[in-house]
Picture 1 (cartoon, rainbow, N blue to C red):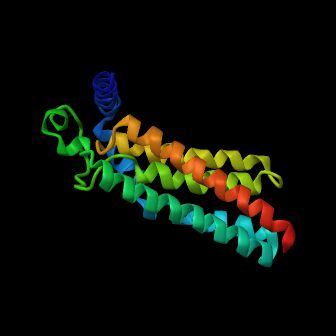
Picture 2: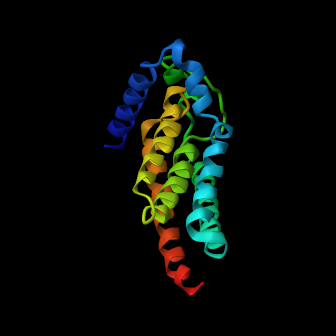
Length: 184
């Protein structure tokens, strides 16, 4: 069963990755860079402080950072523990891919997916009482995570599990934060 799932994962990666064209390579290389999203992080921070003011805003901001830190740590520990090679480092698969980056760290699960979904899920949960348009923010982690398939460095399962882990950590941090907010 696990072998079959792995084969499907590889086949889906090859299919999705090969949908890419040189015309869009520059765009996806930009999207996959963390630095490209700094303005969005600043915007999220401004929203938090706008809606929660200083004292509560600091608590909410602190929990957003905590959600990110827990996600980052869990991602790193899992990558080292599982030690799944990235598809760009597996010769049989790499030959079938359009590889635009060449990281050598492990693949499972995607840090891009886990961290971006953790940040956005937390921000959506804390901002949604004030503005329903915040759900549009999910465009970022979807693009950010999918860019990893486009550049040939993650399997679809890496993305899916990363998104799930980040989302769950964000929900947990939000629930704790929500309980503490009325005490300020």
